[in-house]
Length: 287
Ligand SMILES: NC(=O)c1ccc[n+]([C@@H]2O[C@H](COP(=O)([O-])OP(=O)(O)OC[C@H]3O[C@@H](n4cnc5c(N)ncnc54)[C@H](OP(=O)(O)O)[C@@H]3O)[C@@H](O)[C@H]2O)c1
Image (cartoon, rainbow, N blue to C red):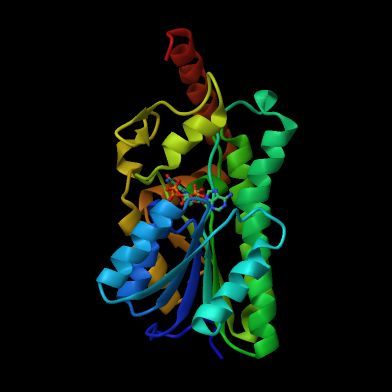
């Protein structure tokens, strides 16, 4: 049996965390357009209600649950909600997450724990809990984790964020092999800079004097050729649901850069150091 849902997504049920905004919201709309039933979660009800309303207005089926993915028991509660609302779960997109941009030396232990709890522990717990249910029911399914291009390399200020995404990438890779023979596909998604709330949130979460300098929704440090819309990522995720792939990339240049950085660490370190100096100059000139 080939792992995954098969090409026909109509009627399949997907849970998307962080589904009220950005990549999650775009993926919810795209999944619904493909005939899937969609459950969204997030901490704010307003954005979730907006997306559910849009999907229903377009003739789709969507529901929502408000909550923090890092709360103990959150995954089970979401999967129980899927059972009650749609009678089960075929796929999950563990997408909820956030970034901080600050030097590791200046991050507090609480900040370090929190970003790992949200971006890694909660995502893995949701995929784990879903995998256990699918396996117990003997059904195929698809578990997708939202990693990042920064799961493959890092930049000054992004050490913690990148680590959460690198770890998630490894967990997905390992689960992919572990669950293959159960018919459960596992994929990681590696977006490049995507125009969403992400960078404004990162600025807030990074604290006074840190965070990206954001212009027009994206950080000034991001090469423009890397900037994409959330719809591009959403389309790639739906394509992956139809035909599972190990890793979802939406930028060939991004993928190539990540590959070069992995193959040639000295080149990568030179780029990183020059980026570090640029940041120091930026800070010295009052940003
Ligand atoms: N934008 C990029 O350039 C980029 C690049 C690579 C990877 N990514 C990844 O893509 C994913 C989606 O990000 P995005 O770009 O779409 O940014 P976004 O618009 O800020 O979306 C993040 C979503 O996650 C939810 N969320 C955050 N913390 C949560 C928590 N503790 N519990 C429940 N929900 C939570 C937020 O909703 P509430 O605030 O209402 O909870 C929000 O809907 C993230 O994992 C991010 O790391 C983004």
